[in-house]
Length: 520
Image (cartoon, rainbow, N blue to C red):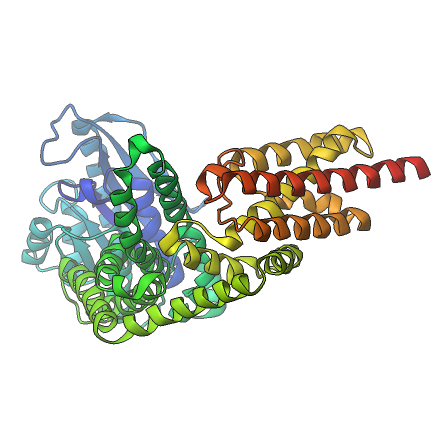
């Protein structure tokens, strides 16, 4: 089926995606591609300000479709009056194509059925082809002309994605074509290859935790600043951030699962606020439930041909409320207890023998990250530890065992590399590890090419972890290395552990490099 897209950046639409026509049209094109609908024409006027206040001299561009390259083409910027004249000529050409049967359906956004879109709308009405669109006034005028309008809505509360999904869903239902929305960065080709997009496949605990990490780092920074006598009042800010963490995770979870932009964000906020009693585990569960409900309620409401504004209200508001109430009355106490059990287990191990716990953590953390289980297993525990205290035992092991060891290995390859080329490779890795507390993968090329360096990384990490246990340090990674001690509960102990890991890794790597050079 061949679809034409017509209209303008609109009045209210301008503030809801119309000011970025490339993204607005790109979302529609992606959804059409998922349903295997062909774009046959685009006639879209994009003004530099809302049509509610635009004048004839307002700058504007005319967007069209290149059928050969299959891309949207932006015309030159002229006055709105001149663009309207160009649009009328293209509209007459489109009307001819409609009359010749080259267009099977039309998507309209803030169209002008009595002006620049008059010819194509009249032709579509005569042919009886289905029309979907947004813009309350314009769609009402289109209907009054006898056009076959199968779905219509205002623009309030809509997003580029929700509008596009609504348009394509209505057309596909009319034509009895199977369609699954393209979500996130997945291409239409990928969607067609798998045949459908399962909502359950978008539930990724690791991804949710990683995306939420900046909030925990912000909490750790506030905790550290609050220790300064002049900034003692920040302790109340720390409490606020701690209480907001479940909401943060719920929003991230809902957005990742539903991928419906602001609709899923609203649902996540509502669910998260009602999930705070369950801690960060409760926030994650509440957000996931909200995302799932948003997905299904959105599709259901679109299929029932609710106005898009109503669809968003139902999907965002009701999904968040239902998920939140389930959490508040049923799941939150269980989620909170699960989190407490994890923290109690870590505390029990540390209480039994903190040095042994640190050594074991240090020895295992490199195999964990190389095997790809660090972010799935260790990071969630770090965040659970940080939830109420702002720092973490495993977070400190992370800094000394991964970041400092990687920094030591890369520093050795700057000072005494096997060849000059390795120094250029090692320098960015060292600077990033020291400056940002991340990018431990910079050590991989040197570890994987030399067994002694690899063993040295494990040994240095174990020693650093043991010192973390000895000094009972709780801290965090993912911050500048020079700032990490100030975010811990034992700055001096943390500095000793960090330096020990770095120096051991540095020394072993240097020896390994010199040994290889001596053999050569």
